[in-house]
Length: 251
Ligand code: MF3
Ligand code: CO
Image (cartoon, rainbow, N blue to C red; front, side):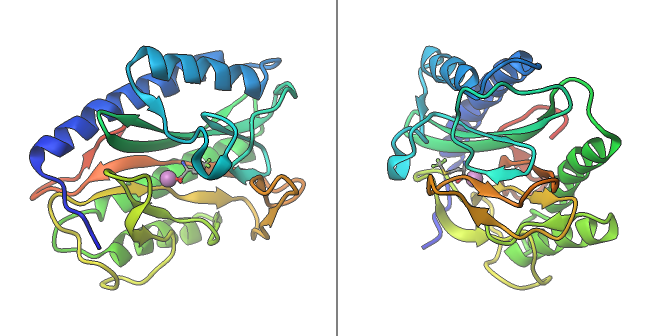
């Protein structure tokens, strides 16, 4: 069942979203050659708690950390370890927090030092694919309009959506209906109504992806040399323009 939020609930999610975006920025500032994913996880966990929020991922389906840290060809769900990030890597940071009982979710991919042109193209294309989906997130449209906008943008720019993972409703729980795939058909799927809150999250690679899950049961990889990126915000459908709850002006 699809759960529409009242304006007061959206306000709380927006507050949680500001907390989440601020912690993301704290993590971002520490990303440099030599830092370890575990150091980023520790920093994030403390920063989340210092802002009176809870790390939603810690213990979720036995996930062992507060954030996902996914370097290079890891698409999502990288478990923070003690291998140092290197100059030229890209690294995706994905996490959710619970704030006053409400969940918000966000992901970004950052360059580590100076990176190849292909990595920049991937990161920027993934952000723009989100922006296209966001623009379609309007009352009167359907979920398929969001999915289609993302798919179409990526296809036109030589980038590839990862189909195994999808966006989702969010708010009272981490994952709510409806599913928000990154490929789809215009005019299909659940209608978008004011009060619907969604995590829109394209996961993208530079070549046709073949996803494998590693032995840890979490780490999703596309294999050596096929870089992946992830861009996610929690978004609210309104009577007018959509609201981005997890970021400022850039979305
Ligand atoms: N934030 C991700 C999502 O969109 C990751 C959830 S899996 C976890 O659902 F175990 F890592 F939390
Ligand atoms: Co999500």
